[in-house]
Amino acid sequence: MQVLKKIIISLIFAAVSSTAFAEAKGEAQVTAAAEGTIAKIEEAMSLVEKGGSKEEIIKTINDARQLQKEFRYEITERQRQKANDKLRIARDAFEKGELQPAEAKLREALAGYIEMKAIYDSNHK
Image (cartoon, rainbow, N blue to C red; front, side, top):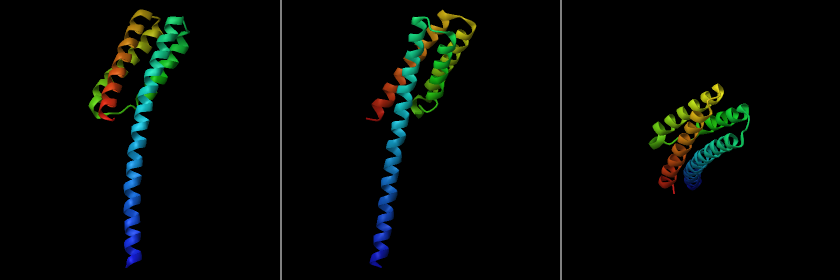
């Protein structure tokens, strides 16, 4: 009976500790996705300012759009969707060679992601 109690208690502790670890890992992934998305948008803006090639800029925007998929937080979900739409519009504008509107949408998207990250950080620290 004592052995059975020890096994059950060990299993309970293992389940609780693995759940806590999973939550911390999830938060780390969301934070990394947020930071990566912001970094890629900033990189795209830097490429625009330096006169980078259209292909480089579009690839960087696409990388940002892939990263933002992991930046999931219920409170900012609608805002994330709107910012992603702005990234898509910016990419499409770059493909058409419309630099001014594309750069403006990149700036709007960047501001949106920075705001979302601030909201996420304020609720997770």
